Amino acid sequence: MADRFDEHFFLIAKETGGIEGLLNSLFSFLLRRTDYYYECDPGDKMGFPPGVALNMLGNIFKKYQDEHYKVHKKKSAQEYKEKLEIYQKKQKELQEKQKEQEELKKEAQNQQKQQKQVQSCENKEQQEVSIKQEQNQQKNESFTHKQKIDPYINTYNGGETEKYSWSQSGNDVVVTMKVPEGSNKKNIKVLITANTLTVKVKDNVVVDGKLYDKVKCDESVWSIEENLLTITLEKGQENIWKTVIQGDQEIDATKVENTKPLDDFDSETQGAIRKIMYDQQRKQQGLPTTEEEQQLEMLKKAWDAEGSPFKGQPFDPSKFNLSNGQIQF
Image (cartoon, rainbow, N blue to C red; front, side, top):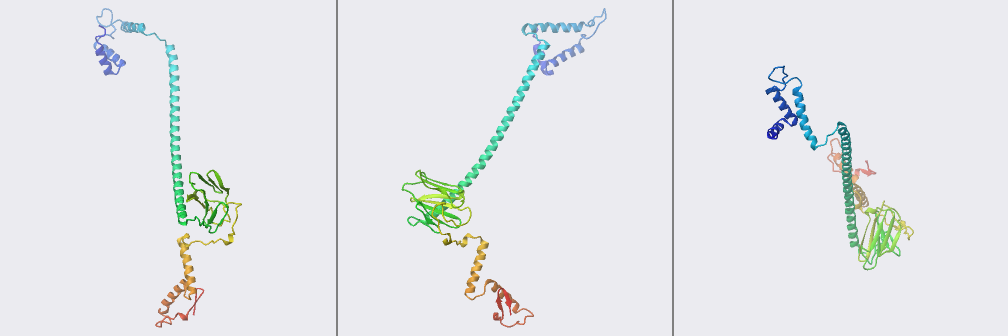
Protein backbone atom coordinates (compact mmCIF):
# COMPACT_ATOMS: atom_id res chain seq x y z
CA MET A 1 0.00 0.00 0.00
CA ALA A 2 3.03 2.26 0.41
CA ASP A 3 3.13 2.94 -3.32
CA ARG A 4 -0.49 4.00 -3.78
CA PHE A 5 0.45 7.70 -3.61
CA ASP A 6 3.41 7.37 -6.02
CA GLU A 7 1.57 9.01 -8.91
CA HIS A 8 0.76 12.01 -6.72
CA PHE A 9 4.35 12.28 -5.49
CA PHE A 10 5.68 11.99 -9.05
CA LEU A 11 3.39 14.77 -10.13
CA ILE A 12 4.46 17.00 -7.20
CA ALA A 13 8.16 16.28 -7.86
CA LYS A 14 7.70 17.11 -11.56
CA GLU A 15 5.84 20.32 -10.78
CA THR A 16 8.33 21.47 -8.10
CA GLY A 17 11.56 20.55 -9.87
CA GLY A 18 12.64 17.30 -8.19
CA ILE A 19 13.16 15.70 -4.76
CA GLU A 20 14.07 18.94 -3.00
CA GLY A 21 10.88 20.53 -4.30
CA LEU A 22 8.88 17.50 -3.20
CA LEU A 23 10.30 17.73 0.37
CA ASN A 24 9.69 21.48 0.47
CA SER A 25 6.07 20.91 -0.49
CA LEU A 26 5.65 18.18 2.14
CA PHE A 27 7.12 20.15 5.05
CA SER A 28 5.32 23.28 3.90
CA PHE A 29 2.08 21.31 4.08
CA LEU A 30 2.95 20.02 7.60
CA LEU A 31 3.61 23.60 8.68
CA ARG A 32 0.48 25.09 7.17
CA ARG A 33 -2.09 22.36 7.70
CA THR A 34 -0.91 20.30 10.73
CA ASP A 35 0.49 20.70 14.25
CA TYR A 36 3.67 18.81 13.38
CA TYR A 37 5.92 21.67 14.39
CA TYR A 38 3.90 22.64 17.48
CA GLU A 39 5.77 21.88 20.76
CA CYS A 40 3.09 21.12 23.33
CA ASP A 41 2.88 21.50 27.10
CA PRO A 42 1.82 18.68 29.43
CA GLY A 43 -1.92 18.06 29.04
CA ASP A 44 -2.12 19.64 25.52
CA LYS A 45 -4.05 17.67 22.93
CA MET A 46 -2.05 18.94 19.91
CA GLY A 47 1.57 18.99 18.84
CA PHE A 48 4.50 17.01 20.18
CA PRO A 49 6.84 17.41 23.13
CA PRO A 50 10.12 19.19 22.27
CA GLY A 51 12.38 16.98 20.11
CA VAL A 52 9.77 14.33 19.33
CA ALA A 53 8.88 15.65 15.85
CA LEU A 54 12.55 15.74 14.81
CA ASN A 55 13.16 12.22 16.22
CA MET A 56 10.10 11.01 14.34
CA LEU A 57 11.56 12.40 11.12
CA GLY A 58 14.95 10.83 11.83
CA ASN A 59 13.43 7.43 12.63
CA ILE A 60 11.38 7.40 9.45
CA PHE A 61 14.42 8.49 7.39
CA LYS A 62 16.59 5.76 9.02
CA LYS A 63 13.90 3.12 8.43
CA TYR A 64 13.99 3.59 4.70
CA GLN A 65 17.76 4.17 4.63
CA ASP A 66 18.21 0.73 6.18
CA GLU A 67 15.97 -0.70 3.48
CA HIS A 68 18.25 0.95 0.92
CA TYR A 69 21.41 -0.53 2.51
CA LYS A 70 19.94 -4.01 2.15
CA VAL A 71 20.25 -3.55 -1.60
CA HIS A 72 23.14 -1.10 -1.93
CA LYS A 73 26.42 -1.09 -0.01
CA LYS A 74 26.91 1.68 2.51
CA LYS A 75 29.65 4.16 1.54
CA SER A 76 31.84 6.18 3.84
CA ALA A 77 32.67 9.87 3.40
CA GLN A 78 36.37 8.99 3.03
CA GLU A 79 35.62 6.49 0.29
CA TYR A 80 33.54 9.09 -1.55
CA LYS A 81 36.35 11.64 -1.21
CA GLU A 82 38.90 9.22 -2.69
CA LYS A 83 36.59 8.32 -5.57
CA LEU A 84 35.89 12.01 -6.15
CA GLU A 85 39.60 12.76 -6.46
CA ILE A 86 40.04 9.90 -8.97
CA TYR A 87 37.03 11.08 -10.95
CA GLN A 88 38.19 14.69 -11.05
CA LYS A 89 41.67 13.57 -12.14
CA LYS A 90 40.22 11.49 -14.99
CA GLN A 91 37.97 14.36 -16.06
CA LYS A 92 40.93 16.71 -16.15
CA GLU A 93 42.97 14.23 -18.23
CA LEU A 94 40.03 13.76 -20.58
CA GLN A 95 39.63 17.51 -21.04
CA GLU A 96 43.34 17.93 -21.70
CA LYS A 97 43.26 15.08 -24.21
CA GLN A 98 40.22 16.57 -25.95
CA LYS A 99 41.93 19.96 -26.06
CA GLU A 100 45.08 18.39 -27.52
CA GLN A 101 43.03 16.52 -30.14
CA GLU A 102 41.21 19.74 -31.09
CA GLU A 103 44.54 21.56 -31.47
CA LEU A 104 45.94 18.72 -33.60
CA LYS A 105 42.78 18.73 -35.69
CA LYS A 106 42.98 22.49 -36.13
CA GLU A 107 46.68 22.27 -37.05
CA ALA A 108 45.93 19.48 -39.55
CA GLN A 109 43.17 21.60 -41.11
CA ASN A 110 45.54 24.59 -41.38
CA GLN A 111 48.23 22.42 -42.97
CA GLN A 112 45.69 20.97 -45.38
CA LYS A 113 44.52 24.48 -46.26
CA GLN A 114 48.12 25.64 -46.82
CA GLN A 115 48.87 22.55 -48.93
CA LYS A 116 45.80 23.26 -51.06
CA GLN A 117 46.93 26.87 -51.52
CA VAL A 118 50.48 25.78 -52.43
CA GLN A 119 49.12 23.09 -54.76
CA SER A 120 46.80 25.62 -56.36
CA CYS A 121 49.71 28.04 -56.93
CA GLU A 122 51.91 25.23 -58.31
CA ASN A 123 49.13 24.04 -60.61
CA LYS A 124 48.61 27.61 -61.82
CA GLU A 125 52.34 28.09 -62.45
CA GLN A 126 52.59 24.70 -64.21
CA GLN A 127 49.57 25.58 -66.31
CA GLU A 128 51.09 28.94 -67.29
CA VAL A 129 54.43 27.28 -68.14
CA SER A 130 52.63 24.56 -70.15
CA ILE A 131 50.63 27.16 -72.06
CA LYS A 132 53.77 29.19 -72.76
CA GLN A 133 55.72 26.12 -73.87
CA GLU A 134 52.83 25.00 -76.04
CA GLN A 135 52.65 28.44 -77.65
CA ASN A 136 56.42 28.40 -78.26
CA GLN A 137 56.16 24.83 -79.57
CA GLN A 138 53.42 25.85 -81.99
CA LYS A 139 55.45 28.89 -83.04
CA ASN A 140 58.50 26.72 -83.66
CA GLU A 141 56.51 24.05 -85.52
CA SER A 142 54.99 26.76 -87.68
CA PHE A 143 58.46 28.13 -88.38
CA THR A 144 59.71 24.62 -89.29
CA HIS A 145 56.75 24.02 -91.55
CA LYS A 146 57.32 27.30 -93.41
CA GLN A 147 61.02 26.74 -93.87
CA LYS A 148 60.87 23.08 -95.11
CA ILE A 149 64.59 22.74 -94.72
CA ASP A 150 65.13 19.21 -95.89
CA PRO A 151 67.16 18.92 -98.05
CA TYR A 152 67.93 22.67 -97.87
CA ILE A 153 68.86 23.11 -94.20
CA ASN A 154 69.01 26.77 -93.11
CA THR A 155 72.45 27.97 -91.95
CA TYR A 156 71.76 31.72 -92.08
CA ASN A 157 74.28 33.46 -89.78
CA GLY A 158 75.35 30.01 -88.55
CA GLY A 159 77.18 26.96 -89.82
CA GLU A 160 77.39 23.16 -90.03
CA THR A 161 79.07 20.39 -88.04
CA GLU A 162 79.15 16.63 -88.58
CA LYS A 163 76.13 16.23 -86.31
CA TYR A 164 73.95 19.28 -86.88
CA SER A 165 73.43 22.57 -88.74
CA TRP A 166 72.44 25.84 -87.13
CA SER A 167 71.30 29.38 -87.83
CA GLN A 168 70.71 32.40 -85.63
CA SER A 169 69.10 35.79 -85.24
CA GLY A 170 69.76 38.32 -82.50
CA ASN A 171 67.28 36.59 -80.19
CA ASP A 172 67.45 32.86 -80.90
CA VAL A 173 69.46 29.94 -82.30
CA VAL A 174 67.85 27.21 -84.43
CA VAL A 175 69.61 23.82 -84.44
CA THR A 176 68.56 21.23 -87.04
CA MET A 177 69.69 17.63 -87.46
CA LYS A 178 68.53 14.62 -89.43
CA VAL A 179 67.35 11.62 -87.40
CA PRO A 180 66.67 8.00 -88.47
CA GLU A 181 63.32 7.11 -90.01
CA GLY A 182 60.74 6.11 -87.46
CA SER A 183 62.07 8.56 -84.91
CA ASN A 184 59.42 10.34 -82.84
CA LYS A 185 58.99 12.20 -79.56
CA LYS A 186 58.84 8.90 -77.65
CA ASN A 187 62.36 7.77 -78.59
CA ILE A 188 63.97 11.23 -78.77
CA LYS A 189 64.99 13.06 -75.63
CA VAL A 190 66.07 16.71 -75.67
CA LEU A 191 67.29 18.22 -72.40
CA ILE A 192 67.79 22.01 -72.38
CA THR A 193 69.22 23.82 -69.36
CA ALA A 194 70.43 27.40 -69.07
CA ASN A 195 73.98 26.33 -70.01
CA THR A 196 73.79 22.88 -71.64
CA LEU A 197 72.13 20.93 -74.46
CA THR A 198 71.74 17.13 -74.57
CA VAL A 199 70.11 15.19 -77.42
CA LYS A 200 69.47 11.42 -77.31
CA VAL A 201 68.04 9.51 -80.29
CA LYS A 202 66.96 5.96 -79.43
CA ASP A 203 69.24 6.01 -76.33
CA ASN A 204 72.24 7.16 -78.42
CA VAL A 205 73.75 10.47 -77.29
CA VAL A 206 74.04 12.69 -80.37
CA VAL A 207 74.79 16.06 -78.74
CA ASP A 208 75.95 16.69 -75.19
CA GLY A 209 77.88 19.81 -74.20
CA LYS A 210 78.00 23.32 -72.80
CA LEU A 211 76.28 26.02 -74.83
CA TYR A 212 78.14 29.04 -76.20
CA ASP A 213 76.07 31.33 -73.97
CA LYS A 214 73.10 31.11 -71.59
CA VAL A 215 69.58 30.46 -72.90
CA LYS A 216 66.05 30.80 -71.52
CA CYS A 217 65.31 27.10 -71.07
CA ASP A 218 61.60 27.59 -70.28
CA GLU A 219 61.15 29.45 -73.59
CA SER A 220 63.25 27.02 -75.68
CA VAL A 221 61.41 24.28 -77.59
CA TRP A 222 61.98 21.40 -80.01
CA SER A 223 59.96 19.51 -82.61
CA ILE A 224 60.37 16.71 -85.14
CA GLU A 225 58.95 16.64 -88.67
CA GLU A 226 59.82 14.40 -91.62
CA ASN A 227 62.88 12.90 -89.86
CA LEU A 228 64.24 16.37 -89.12
CA LEU A 229 64.74 17.44 -85.50
CA THR A 230 64.51 21.21 -84.92
CA ILE A 231 65.59 22.82 -81.63
CA THR A 232 64.94 26.52 -81.03
CA LEU A 233 67.06 28.02 -78.24
CA GLU A 234 65.88 31.39 -76.92
CA LYS A 235 69.01 33.43 -76.14
CA GLY A 236 69.48 34.77 -72.63
CA GLN A 237 70.57 38.09 -74.14
CA GLU A 238 70.66 39.54 -77.64
CA ASN A 239 74.11 38.78 -79.08
CA ILE A 240 76.01 36.86 -81.77
CA TRP A 241 77.09 33.24 -81.20
CA LYS A 242 80.23 31.84 -82.83
CA THR A 243 79.06 28.24 -82.27
CA VAL A 244 76.31 26.30 -80.52
CA ILE A 245 78.33 23.87 -78.39
CA GLN A 246 81.63 25.05 -76.94
CA GLY A 247 84.49 23.19 -78.63
CA ASP A 248 82.64 22.75 -81.95
CA GLN A 249 83.73 24.57 -85.11
CA GLU A 250 83.25 28.36 -84.82
CA ILE A 251 82.14 30.86 -87.48
CA ASP A 252 83.60 34.29 -88.29
CA ALA A 253 81.37 36.60 -86.24
CA THR A 254 82.39 39.63 -88.35
CA LYS A 255 80.57 38.13 -91.35
CA VAL A 256 77.27 37.71 -89.50
CA GLU A 257 74.39 39.79 -90.85
CA ASN A 258 73.29 41.66 -87.73
CA THR A 259 70.44 43.73 -89.09
CA LYS A 260 67.10 43.78 -87.32
CA PRO A 261 63.63 43.96 -88.97
CA LEU A 262 61.86 47.27 -88.44
CA ASP A 263 58.82 45.49 -86.98
CA ASP A 264 60.98 44.19 -84.10
CA PHE A 265 61.25 47.73 -82.65
CA ASP A 266 58.59 49.48 -80.59
CA SER A 267 56.22 51.92 -82.31
CA GLU A 268 58.07 55.04 -81.11
CA THR A 269 61.42 53.78 -82.38
CA GLN A 270 59.84 52.69 -85.67
CA GLY A 271 58.46 56.21 -86.16
CA ALA A 272 61.86 57.81 -85.53
CA ILE A 273 63.59 55.39 -87.94
CA ARG A 274 61.00 56.00 -90.67
CA LYS A 275 61.47 59.78 -90.25
CA ILE A 276 65.26 59.45 -90.67
CA MET A 277 64.83 57.23 -93.75
CA TYR A 278 62.30 59.68 -95.23
CA ASP A 279 64.62 62.67 -94.68
CA GLN A 280 67.59 60.83 -96.22
CA GLN A 281 65.50 59.97 -99.27
CA ARG A 282 64.36 63.62 -99.61
CA LYS A 283 67.94 64.86 -99.40
CA GLN A 284 69.03 62.45 -102.13
CA GLN A 285 66.23 63.82 -104.33
CA GLY A 286 67.21 67.43 -103.56
CA LEU A 287 63.98 68.05 -101.67
CA PRO A 288 63.56 69.65 -98.22
CA THR A 289 63.54 67.42 -95.14
CA THR A 290 60.64 67.16 -92.69
CA GLU A 291 62.13 69.86 -90.48
CA GLU A 292 62.80 72.14 -93.46
CA GLU A 293 59.23 71.67 -94.68
CA GLN A 294 57.95 72.78 -91.27
CA GLN A 295 60.21 75.86 -91.42
CA LEU A 296 58.94 76.76 -94.92
CA GLU A 297 55.34 76.54 -93.68
CA MET A 298 56.22 78.98 -90.89
CA LEU A 299 57.90 81.33 -93.41
CA LYS A 300 54.82 81.27 -95.67
CA LYS A 301 52.68 82.42 -92.76
CA ALA A 302 55.18 85.14 -91.76
CA TRP A 303 55.68 86.27 -95.44
CA ASP A 304 52.22 87.76 -95.76
CA ALA A 305 51.74 88.79 -92.11
CA GLU A 306 51.10 92.38 -91.00
CA GLY A 307 54.35 94.39 -90.90
CA SER A 308 56.17 92.02 -93.26
CA PRO A 309 58.19 93.77 -96.03
CA PHE A 310 57.04 91.00 -98.42
CA LYS A 311 53.32 91.39 -97.75
CA GLY A 312 51.30 91.20 -101.00
CA GLN A 313 54.21 89.67 -102.99
CA PRO A 314 54.27 86.01 -104.21
CA PHE A 315 56.15 83.71 -101.80
CA ASP A 316 59.74 83.15 -102.98
CA PRO A 317 61.65 80.48 -101.01
CA SER A 318 64.87 81.33 -102.90
CA LYS A 319 65.23 84.42 -100.73
CA PHE A 320 65.93 82.14 -97.78
CA ASN A 321 68.69 79.66 -97.11
CA LEU A 322 67.69 76.71 -94.89
CA SER A 323 70.99 75.37 -93.63
CA ASN A 324 71.54 73.06 -90.62
CA GLY A 325 68.11 73.87 -89.30
CA GLN A 326 68.74 77.65 -89.36
CA ILE A 327 67.08 80.33 -91.55
CA GLN A 328 69.41 82.74 -93.38
CA PHE A 329 68.29 85.69 -95.61
